Image (tube, rainbow over all chains, first blue to last red; front, side):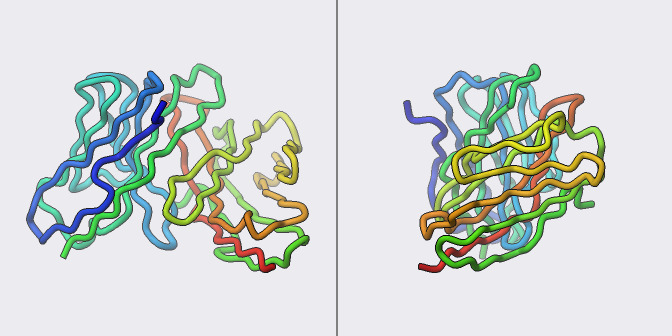
Length: 115
Length: 113
């Protein structure tokens, strides 16, 4: 049981390049999330998904796109990377809420630098 | 617009002391208040959580105190240990719509030996 995994762990991009971050979970969770973490800014939600084939915008969605073609995978895309997107990106997943505590399980993160 | 305000930004406590981190919120629609712990180079992990119908929840050395009328909640770490050195995030969840969490900005705790 690997939990939540993220690929890659590190990446350096040049301004204008594109890339896709992959998140995978093996806990059969309905909900999946992408956050970015910047010093002094906490965790900010980029996009999230409440089930296969669905996505929704979070607090800071601009410059990112996501897809959830399979329940266990959640992809985060940067079409044209900018230095402002230098950050540590975390994926998380959780069970459907329904009154439960809705614990989010986080992956180990991807450190992205855009030059 | 920051919906969950966390303080302090950083905290140094001696081993055996009490660490206290505070959070305040304004939206009364929040119905679940978790704390997450993050060690360097790792993803955050749920530490302890509380619902607003109780004023305190304790798990081992970790206690959440919740003041609904003041819209504040705090994390107390008793007998703090060097292994508690980490970044702590408070968060809050809305009780309607989809259950996304709004996080505070985090507190970096250092417990000195």
